Length: 294
Image (cartoon, rainbow, N blue to C red; front, side):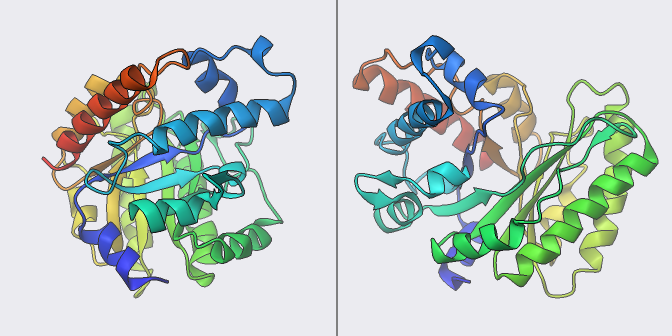
């Protein structure tokens, strides 16, 4: 593991750009970008379209280490190039931005109020590839939709069991037990989730993780994680909140940075010329950065 990258992620000023839309979420992302399904023939062409969007974002002048610490990549993006250079190498060598890899393969059907990550027997092989590609860490998402203590416990257990595998490969995992922003008992879920995560962190020994969480109903609920010895960083996802509201919620929580996806690409369109595109992404990056450093 690179000590330089670890120090940057732990102490740097900025946020994590989530550019990791997968096969399930890519059509919606492209549609918001103005690329409709009739504009690509198959999945391969779809991924080429989304890689083009990501490349355009990364090549924007404002997408740099002055504001952005890391970028989360989809596997297809990790295995693709930007200007003839492997994406993770381009991000680090050209922009000094750390790369993370989305490693979950989607979600199981809803059970006990939650959606666990699908089992992936090929995870160790993917992690080996990530190490070879110069990836610093990983990201894995599961979702809590209801206050069901057994389900929430399963979510946290699975997240940290997979984190152990990732840590054994020398990578830093982003642990992401998302709470659905529409959950009826969202505050109650978050209080119990906080307790469970704390227990897991205290049992990690010298190992360190990044937490990516939904903005909580109670401001600064997760502040003790920010200062925990086993935490590199605490980040908030946008979770479906509009950018302005996601930024507002983020700014009310001390020491937490953004890791936004939809909120980052808000307002971008394939038909924008470079000037309009770059102006739009710059406004988003500046606003998200400002909320991350408050």
